[in-house]
Amino acid sequence: MGEQHVSQRWSLRFPAETQICHFDGESLVFNPLSWETHLLNVSAAEVVSVLSEGPQYFDILVGRMREAGMNVQNGVSVEDQLEGLLIELESLGIAIRSL
Amino acid sequence: MRRLNELAPDQLRGALQAEGIGLSLGTARVHIRSDVPALAPALARVYGQFPVEEPSGFFDVAPRLELVRRPGQLFRAQLRFFVDGEVPFELFPGDTHLPLLEWGLNWCLADRSNHKLLLHAGVVEKNGRAAILPALPGSGKSTLTAALSARGFRLLSDEFGVLDPMDGTLRALLRPIALKNESIEVIRRFHPDAVLGPRFPKTRKGDVAHMAPDRASVDRRDEPAVPHVVLFPAYEAGAATVLEELPPARCFAKLSTNSFNYEVLGPAGFRAVTRLVESTRGYSLRYSTLEEAVERVQRLFESER
Image (cartoon, rainbow over the protein chains, first blue to last red):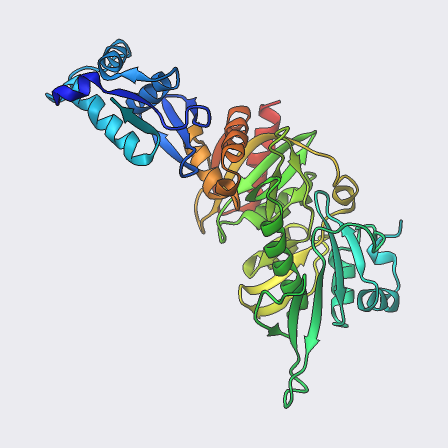
């Protein structure tokens, strides 16, 4: 994980318009930028849910994800997993970062 | 108000050529005009139970079907579908009047009904609860919808499942069921009393015949229905009948891909499908025997009372 990520703040690009629904361990999110619907895994859905509460610093997000059960997977740290998820959500136009 | 099949043949032909015929399909009204003589008896057969509306006021779609004779082709007339001053399709063979009218109506209604979520689905109802049958072409949707309607389910639609995003209810967009190829004889055998229109051979979609909605369905076309189950039918020759519950997220994905305007509606479409999935159970229904498929659906309605 790059050191700069610790101070980065993440938020939903369009918080009021981003909708998420949860069904038996699977989640769907409505992307207000593309008007597409994305199927999210548990971790990505948790990230979107936490961001829907408001902008979050990266280290706070790491803590929230640990609380939600995210742990080291195949030698990949929670920070790196989270960074990957956030970059993916950013590329979809769902999440956005600011310093 | 007189029903379409109560008009004398000459009267219907004359009205189609002059002021036109207005029909209320439930959630949409159409106004049809045509100078094609053979269209009148076909309409009387498959729209026979529909009351004839005054040909004035607002209509969602007002098409005109015209005969076109080109020089040197006096005996091979073609058909033109004309709507709102435009001709959206190429000319069709002269003997495909009803299929062209129905496809043209599909095209117009799909384009103009974005205040509702339109699913490519049959919808039938019993005791106020509806089964939605979304499917891709060739999956046996129309055949199963026709069969359920023949076994006491009220028909709301075959082509368009119309969901009101405001209250989550289903609305009728009632029209004849377009049966294709082998399905025509399958339904004739399954329900010998079915009122079928003329058979149109070798159209762009193969042989086509339309099954008329029954009178009770026509008379109740303004009554909404509450979604109860979503069934994705899949006809497969020789297959055993298998009904399997689908995970809700999978049901959501299949519903959204079977919708004509899910992405057009954006957040309203997402909310409507979410509500639909939360309030129903979704199943896949693989079948080869119509009787067994109908029985499974009937049992599903009985077991989930």
